[in-house]
Length: 417
Ligand code: FE2
Image 1: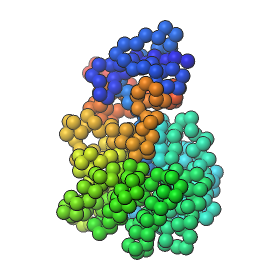
Image 2: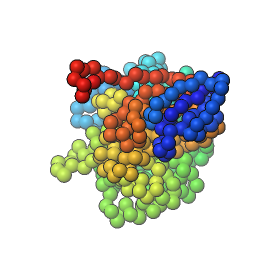
Image 3: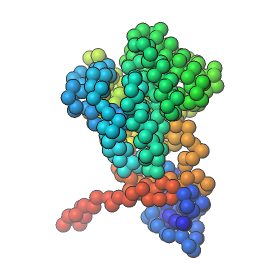
C-alpha cells in the first residue's frame, strides 16, 4: 500500500514537501514526488511534524480527583499523595484500565502517539502495574507506552518498598522510578537514588525519578542522581522529572551543578501546569513559579521536555492530554518566547520527549522510519504556537488514526465568515 501526502509544511524547510509512505514506513521525502500507484492526499501546506510525546503521566490516577475522599483541599503535592494513599485500595485492574483508556483517547486524539506513564508499585497486589502492562499491549497499534515502576509512597518509608519496585521491573516495567524527596529522611532519599541506579544496571532499564519536586532549596537529590549515572555511563538513559527545587537553588550552586548536568547528558521533564499549581504553596509573596530552570537547562544544551503529568487526579484538577496547552503554559512560565524559541517550541513536546524516552531510532519524519506523524491546523511553527493550533490528522504506521475537521465560523458578516 502506497500513500503520497502532498504539500506538507515541515518544521525546518520553507518549501512544502511531498511524503511517500510505503506500507508502514516513510519511503521518501522531497519537494516533488511521483508514485503512479499511490493514493494521493493533499495536506494543503499545513504544518506536519512527528507525533506529540507525553513523557510523564500517571495513567493509573486519571479522573480520580472528585472520587470520595480523594479531593485535595490544600493543593499541595503532599496532600495529593495522602489522598491517593487513602483511596487507592478501591481501585481494581479493570477500573484502572477503563479510566486509562479514556485518558489515552484524550491524548491520542490531541496528537500524542508516545506516552511514558508511571505505575504506582507501592501496592503488594500490583494492581496499577498489572492494568498498565495489559494496556501497553492492548493499545500498541495506536500508542507506544513505556511504564515506570514508581514507588509513589517511597522505597524506604515502609518495609519492602524497594522490593516492590524490583518486582515491578521483573513484571515488565521499562523504567525504574523513585521519589527521594518523599522519603522520611534525606539519608533514605539518597538510599533510594542509589537503589534506583543499582536496579537500572541490574535489569538494563531506563531511569525516571520524581526528583526534588519541592520548593525546598535544600532538596538536592538531582546532584546525587547525576553523579551516580554519570559515573555509571548511563546519564543519557536517565531522566530527572520535576526538579522544582533546582528553580529555587542559589545561583552559585546551580552554576556548579549545571556543568555536571551537561557532562552527564541527563534528560529533564518539566510539568508546567501541575508544578505552577502545586508549588509555591508555602510562599506568601513573592510567590515562586515552581518550575525547574527550563530555559537555562535548554540554553546549556541539556535535553528538556514538557509533560502533562495529571489528568484530573488528587494532584491537579484539570488536564486533558492536549500537549499544546502544556506547551503554551510552559513557554510562558519559563519565559521562552523569543521568536527563535517560539519557532522551535514544538521540540519541547516532540523530539525532546522522544530523546527522553530513548526512541529516536523509530521517531522522526525520515525515510526508513515508521510513518508516524501529525498535521496541525497552521501554516508554520510560529503560527501553530500563536494560535494554539489543533491537530487535524494523525498517521501511525502509515494508517490514519484520525482526521479532524477544524471548526468553521458561520456569519453573515464577511469579515467574520
Ligand atoms: Fe508525576
